[in-house]
Length: 118
Image (cartoon, rainbow, N blue to C red; front, side, top):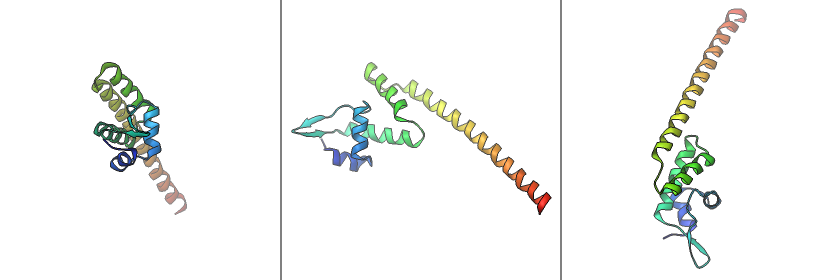
């Protein structure tokens, strides 16, 4: 059992972010002890997972769909998560190819400038 300050400290998430995760249904609505929200170790795991997923390009809307499916089926939808990861990786590969192509065109432009004006 912990309060929001401790949860924020353990996860690196701000109190505002934690409340946002609650309002979006990404973490369960916490129980209360008096007027204070009380969180569990499971909330630490969920928030750390949310934050890691965000660092690799997932947005909260994408994560909400996973959480909704988890709540509906009472188990984490590994298959759906794997599909989302595969789609992110494919997009990343396409972005990398586009970036490499742009880099090559920059090299060619620089070579052309050197030939014509160097």
